Length: 377
Image: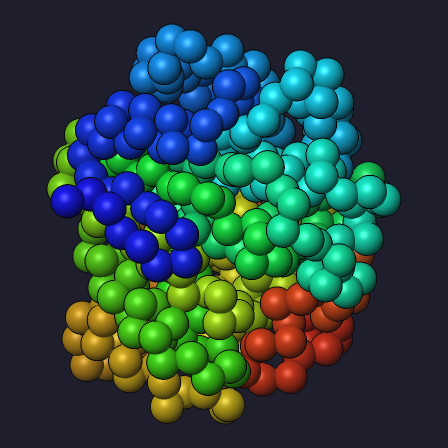
């Protein structure tokens, strides 16, 4: 059986795309879905596979220009296309950016007012109603887990990268087919994989009390840490790809509990639109620094993380993660990502105000985040 029911309905199996998509679009009774994807997915031939899997009676509208970090402008422009063509469903097909963009479009086409009024930092969760069109999420990377999460992250026109949270944002259906990740290049496999690993670690040490989330996070970390190097080294290793997709799903299922300082900073830095920073790579660079910062408050939970990663005695948690990033070809400093001190000064106060800061296990101020990012330069 490929079907999992947790927060939403998830089809998870190799080559399940065609069967699941046909069944779920029929069950939803849709006639004109909008497919939200990106140029890389189209170039890899995956978009053709998706379109071929659709019922011939459907008349899809295709948007394939999703930015690397979805923007408010892209959301508003795409919502106009959705409305103009009479669409009745969104299919987010690609990495987290495409799925997040599809979720944000669902808000715009069903709610009035500026998109920013629905962000977490502006108390927007209470304003989001159960009137969104159905969203089907189909990941082609193994990282964000947006296919099972209640959030979407958008870069707004004023430069802020903000989260929108609501249980109504959880996609109606997720289709997780590991074969869709087989052509993902090594650098993207590495970056997205570290995003999944960071989700599992940050969730496990977050302040909220949520034992189910803790268990799911540890399982995801076990799978992710054991398989990320295999997936990077040999993209055709389907077993490793399957485990990384499971790790990504687990990370997002668990981060309903909350995240922390890594994401507070990576969201803030991600607003530097002109630098085109990869979210997962930012997480990989910042994670060791945040683990050291949080140790006075939560180091008693690090033993379970070390056990999940099967670390030998004497190997420090943060150092192990830094060495992993280096082995899979990722930068280990913000300087390698072309960030400068001025970027840190801009991002530090935004990090303090980010919604993920509230569940960091140790209170962190803008000054703390400034110091952490300067250390990571």
